[in-house]
Image 1 (spheres, rainbow, N blue to C red):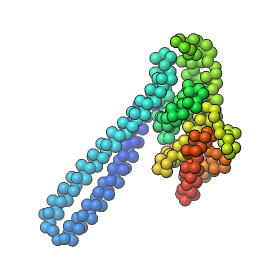
Image 2 (tube, rainbow, N blue to C red):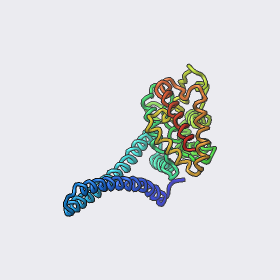
Image 3 (tube, rainbow, N blue to C red):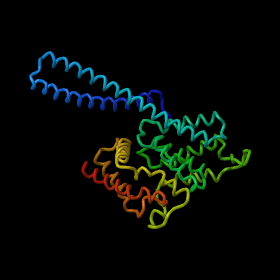
Image 4 (tube, rainbow, N blue to C red):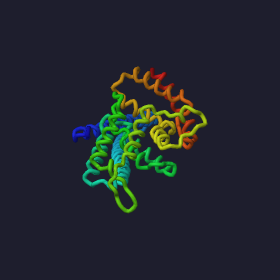
Length: 314
């Protein structure tokens, strides 16, 4: 459901809480440094007035540094969100250039509200941006750019960690968008737009989204066999995070854990480990040659490391 103003404010307060926690840790570290310095000054038997003067200077310096850091973090948080939103919004405008403006804006706000909902930590516009970056870099390998673009926008538009039918519900929302926007019958041709039933595009998007259900093709099950269809690239785009560097992967695991915060730690660790083991059991995590060569080794290493983390936490 779209976010209310109260929910948006709550989400912003949660972000500020994280900054406040880090601010407290920084203050604590500075105070420890101050205590050590004060002890050193006392050991050197410096005049009490000089120690007091230095103490006051340090306290002012600590406050200034923490305020400066806080201002910077809040600014970065706003800039990052705005930049990602602007990037995704431009993709939406480009993709829907032939859709009426009021419908285009209405559905942009709908899609944005879903991806910005409070329960989202990983499945946000940042995830979509990563997928679009991969699409742009491999555009010459893609047969139907528009289909993949719509699939990127709608594949996680409905996301509930408790649900087993997110893909089906996302497809339903995409179909509703198609009906309202005219995508179902709008087929662009050279120099003009002919209104013909564009069932091929719609069915292709549905196919891509539903492929996420199994997230596995014959190419995943066969070593040495590479996928070259749009569905193979789309699936690889979706899980490219698995092959990211260690720090980024660690951040991803924390975000996923937050999305499953309704589960007790022990239960989450068991279920998460089972999912990760499935990735290790199939011959290849990535279907396409480009992704397999670039990310396969790192993805397996990251997954194995996370499994070990989960065992230690348990």
